[in-house]
Length: 125
Picture 1: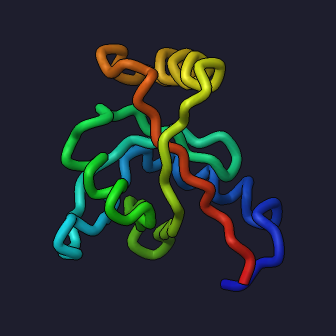
Picture 2: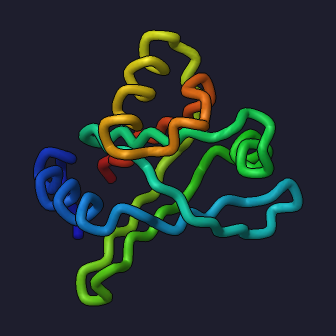
């Protein structure tokens, strides 16, 4: 499906990812081998926030190659695939904002909000 703006699909996207909640994310390890894991991003429009530890294996993979691929497949007839670039959020204001979002969404409050990955998901072709 080709769209000219994220706003063309935003409502449907948010509805689907909120209905599914968990997704599979694929990264490349430091030897360029694929690695998948389960994540629970919190979406604000086209930005997904993920709390993680700065020196985790996932963080090492993202440092090696910031491009990740997410798959939400609760309904096999209507999957959502998201290709994005991940990076560390350094702004204390944004970290505090994400911490509040995580608490409001029932997220894990044991993961410190200073370790947050953001991904802009829409890149028009």
